[in-house]
Length: 143
Image (cartoon, rainbow, N blue to C red; front, side, top):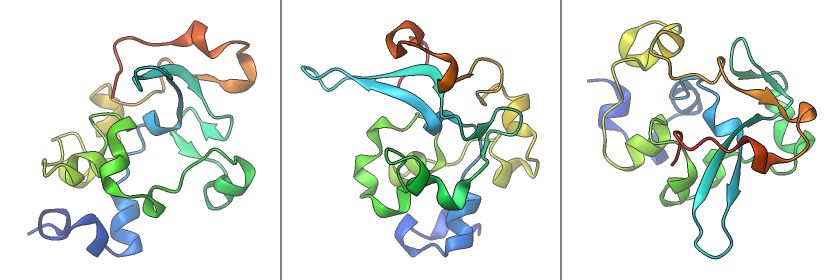
């Protein structure tokens, strides 16, 4: 059995937890929340710390200090993951769902995320290049 099939998120070691991230970059996209409805909208705007070729944070260990709005998922209740994309391994496992075939832990390849068209590399733009987040809402990617 694979660890993600027999352990809960809370039971995972730090290494197991980190290996769940598929490095799609979607969690680093800026999101807007409608104050009246609570509805979340994803934008194509990503944190400046992301390397758009690898979809990895260039300052991962310091990210929460450097970017005060950055969240350490391990510090949150897993039921709060509604804002995460539906493809996120943490959200899928919290909901009792299996990992998709393109996930690196299943496919055995880090490139499978990009090959499946799941990563943000083809459409994301850095926040330093954007004036108004509302101009960059992407309707097709919703939580």
